[in-house]
Length: 443
Image (cartoon, rainbow, N blue to C red):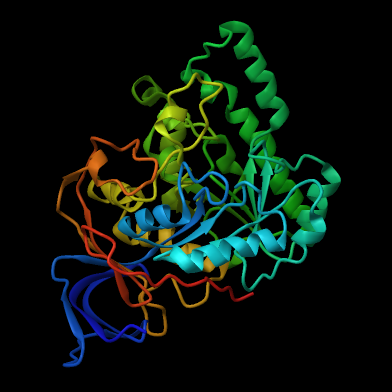
């Protein structure tokens, strides 16, 4: 168990304010915040640095098992630690899909062996595994994932009676990927008729357009209201969809919540010209107007949390023709510094970054004793140098796939250290420890 650590004179970012304080950690938990001294503690001089709660990423794809040429729980969780992400929730569309309790447990067992950060895994839903879904333990599993749009293997849920069964009976939060499959297929066929095999990637947001997203997300929200489901709609990518969600409500008063992802907040369809398939995600990166609407929704509370949808593929795979190139890309190592860039630009206060990437994620999923810098919380902490510019280079990447859509970007802030359960796991240059635990939930 971790010993005593005293973060001295940090700019503590927590619960809507920034204040200079000391933070004392003992046995992996925060024991005091204030004007402190302890001769037995290791002292971390944090003057001039933001001390933030560790980010909790509620949507990643770490590719293990079955797709480990792209990434592994070990490699991608290390990249997460380097990026200030201290907890992750991973999706079930691996090979095999996590559609049984046994396959789900296998992923937990693997993470316990190799992850330097905390972890949870979603139970997968399909058209024919409702009985397995209903066996999910809400205290030990973050949620149930439903693809209302195609994915890897047998994970498209498109039968109305199955969807209603999940929404009515799920023992825990239901997280959904919303794109209308019929709309996407029709628009892909139209693109094939026009371009043949040489569809330009700039057509991606036309094939997977706002209408495809809205048809599916509105259906999910309608079913959630019908059945009283705790619904979490992942990676909102359009201005139109924002009308489906409530602003101005406390999170505890919401049964339907929304997530935005870094790539939809950072890139626009103009970037396909230079980045091509490297920013091909599902849902697609869309217009600058959509991007600006999403950023505004971070401030008014329409968007509840920010995540990455980290989904690595090899450069060889990304270099294929549009139809053959898979969707997704690596993001966990740069998500927090990307959000902090908007702080420096005056788009967001740094306190809102902590809310969107830590406080509200912990509240939404009811994660026990995490997400804040307060006595009794696990010491999942990120020490950030606010003004330490650096450039993203391929040599500094920890992703197994070895590339990033942010290569060449200069970020203003730098992750100096990442601490998980009171243990330093990232020292600014390398992974130096491992302390990940299974997340638990107060449900």
